[in-house]
Length: 291
Ligand code: HSE
Image 1 (cartoon, rainbow, N blue to C red):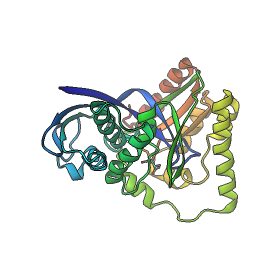
Image 2 (image 1 turned 90 degrees about the vertical axis):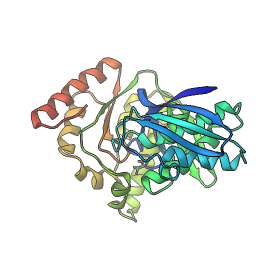
Image 3 (image 1 turned 45 degrees about the vertical axis):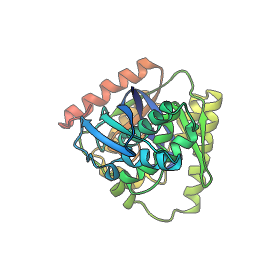
Image 4 (image 1 turned 180 degrees about the vertical axis):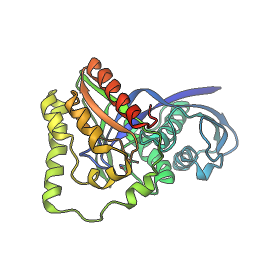
């Protein structure tokens, strides 16, 4: 018996929630087929759509799956084949989606012994292979869908947040590669009290806005005084494209995860589609490839 699972791409941080907030994106993601076998461990049979290691311990899905099997004391294993629908290093949770897919798939096979929160924990172990640090702000929304908040890592907890029905996102993916590890290394170790207060106010404002369908509050809250000022230098024309998005109806604009993808939140599908056109034309004029 085999099963095939799909894990969606995600936007981590959402500007004001570095390492603690994220949401899933409709329609794009990784697909994985799993087969239970008597041989212990995870054997990666094939990876389509990306040049990635088939070696279990060097692969996010391999490491996440192994962590889960070990915790369950499993005396069996899985063969997996991965179809990457998310470009590598694009900033929309490509590695997290593979980690989410493997733990979700194994759980399905075993009649769901673990909760989604526990799966996110094991998924995070895999994600660390790619980014050099354990954070679950991509893997949690990939598993739960919608918006998720991680109020704490120790003990590890995931809270599913409501998604206002008219909230849409436009993602712009410039064809440059940014490694999460490197995008983390350029961040300062310390921040000012003033900026910490602004950022926590924004995170609280966004969460409140999600619960109350308050688009205006969401718009004012999705801002980042801690991370974006350092990372935007990795993204060509970031300030201009942000201004273009905000003057063309976006509620908010920011870096998706560690980039290079950027996200624009919009109220209504039409606005999101219109904005996609504006942003695409902007990059075309600059001669940069995007999708
Ligand atoms: N929170 C993470 C970061 C997401 O911004 O570094 C990318 O893995």
